[in-house]
Amino acid sequence: MRIEKFTKLKNGMYKLLLEDGSNVMAYEDLILKRDILLKREISEEDLSNIDKLNNNYNAYDIAIKYITTKYRSIYEVRTYLSKKEIDKEVIDDVISRLKEQKYLDDKVFAKAFVNDRLKFSNYGPYKIKRELEEVKVSPNIIDEVLSVFDMELEHKRLSKLVPKYVKTIHNKSYVMMKNKVINYFSSLGYNRSIIEEFLDDIQYDDSASREKEYQKLHKKLSKKYSGSELELKIKEAMYRNGYR
Image (cartoon, rainbow, N blue to C red):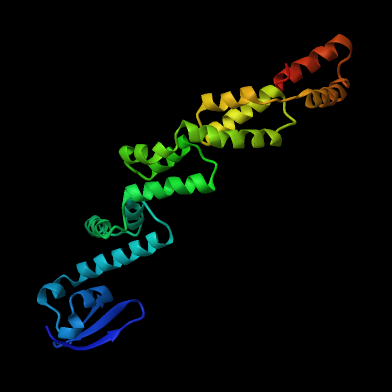
């Protein structure tokens, strides 16, 4: 059908006045791809499918803006579009188009994700793996990209991180310090046995904190107990706090 007049709008769309007096809205990408303005015509097929085509271009535009700010997994883009209440068929079309254009690639995404975590976080391999699993990257890809995080690298990172963390909890008993280190680095995704190896090599003196804890407990408990009973209560409390 012949186009009598067209107007470009601010939202990336065109308003087309057709020869029968009706108006239709079409995305700029559709206009350019079909050479509609050059021909000054819009095909009957495009006209009958204009809503579907607009929905596709709209969804594609939303997806492009979403992945421009940060590289995403296929699952993340699909979930984001679903929350925008876009039809599944349209989402499938958009995902296929983005994959063909190399804008979506879970392997590329996963490699970049691991590199980012290695540079800008203290995360270990298991935490990174869990994060990739959350965005539905396939197990094969996860295993491949995490191969760079071998035992040697884990040792290297922990050799710097563990001593630094221990300095922040120097006022704890050795037992409490050890438990906090294991729990903390396990939560960051490191292998427990490797963490314990570093703890075995750390020189840690809790005599000062032991004395401080003893004096604090003595002052508190002496208000209620005395003699051998006081010493027993102090010993029990210190034991609970990890002093042996």
